[in-house]
Length: 182
Ligand SMILES: CC(C)(COP(=O)(O)OP(=O)(O)OC[C@H]1O[C@@H](n2cnc3c(N)ncnc32)[C@H](O)[C@@H]1OP(=O)(O)O)[C@@H](O)C(=O)NCCC(=O)NCCS
Image 1 (cartoon, rainbow, N blue to C red):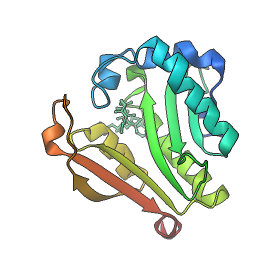
Image 2 (image 1 turned 135 degrees about the vertical axis):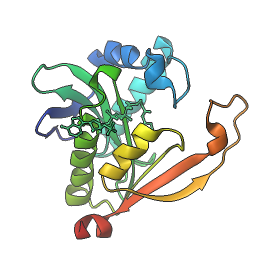
Image 3 (image 1 turned 90 degrees about the vertical axis):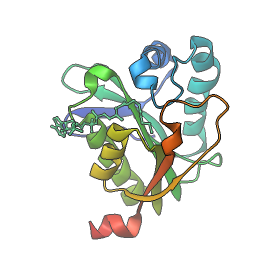
């Protein structure tokens, strides 16, 4: 996976040495509020999450970048263009998760735009899509600033739903044609 540089961020590959970074990121209930609502156990990150991230690099060019603040060298979180299991790049799922101290600075939007550019300009991607809870307003704003459009709202059943689940989930997309048109 290629390193990307934006004005304020370096987006690089994850390595085994990022275990503590990922554990710390997922330990903040504010970060996890619209995801699982609770911290991700260290064992799950060590045995499932990080191996899956590293495994994606073996299958193709797309996956999850660690987002580093260039000025400080600090780990801020991640930006992803998640491929399907076969590692193909035609349709990629945009995702992002940043430490709360990095919110409100435009970092997620800056990283998302760079990732999207990489997909459409270099990997032959035709469609970038994303899903989030309808009530995750900060995430929806990032999607909109990155150029994605709302395509549908739908409802899923959860045995133990997060607050706000009753408002449903939203899907956004940006096609390459729309991206080229700007
Ligand atoms: C989703 C998430 C990354 C959004 O973070 P964010 O800080 O709101 O988004 P950005 O980094 O794009 O920053 C945009 C904000 O910074 C402000 N900002 C400040 N300086 C800026 C700059 N130089 N450039 C752009 N925006 C700037 C913007 O005004 C905007 O604030 P507003 O939405 O109140 O108007 C963050 O809430 C998060 O990590 N949440 C937890 C994980 C999660 O829910 N992920 C999504 C799952 S689908």
